[in-house]
Length: 263
Image 1 (cartoon, helix red, strand yellow):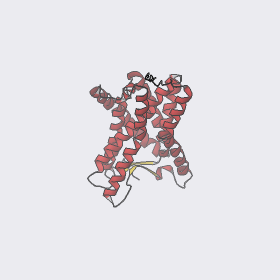
Image 2 (cartoon, rainbow, N blue to C red):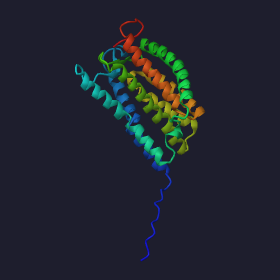
Image 3 (cartoon, rainbow, N blue to C red):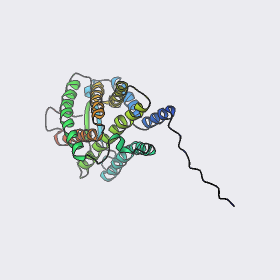
Image 4 (cartoon, helix red, strand yellow):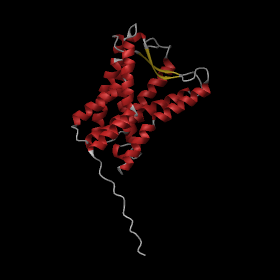
């Protein structure tokens, strides 16, 4: 009896329709949905009585006030589940047999990535704070409250973990993954840059027009740097540092300095 020959399974090339559907699904499960939520939140803010600057947007808040261990469980759960879309992107890139290194998220250049990230954070962080204070004073932004966690032992670690989670999620989805897919779909570089920047601005609209515009500008800078370096590692480092300083700095300084608005 002649053994039947096993034929290898061939993987068909990805069609444009498949890439478009995949991209929309990834965005719907992550920051695209956050953009829609931010728009709804902003409509609620502008239609509520009172000036925008008298309303607060809390970034990292308590999930179980008065119950620190339950609160910690919710914080860890929120951070872990927020990274699920990143795991999906890693899977999709692995299916292409390129993996995360294709977007420059690996350990091949840790010192260079961190050094570049620190420079970016110093420039954008300082100008971003000045911009926020200006647009809030002009009435175009809500008062951003970076954190309102209880003063317990896990407060700072959770704030740092939240900062890193924000950085990884946003830079992987909005820069690395999205630009790769748009390039594969034949989008012109400037059109892809605009799409990435507008998406980044959209899910910050809950903070007000200043939050949206400021993050769109940051998005343009980040895309240009990514195109130059071919790596999101420095962007993740910069974003992590910016958010860590914002979260931890607020926890330390809120109510102690007059120039820092509090909710």
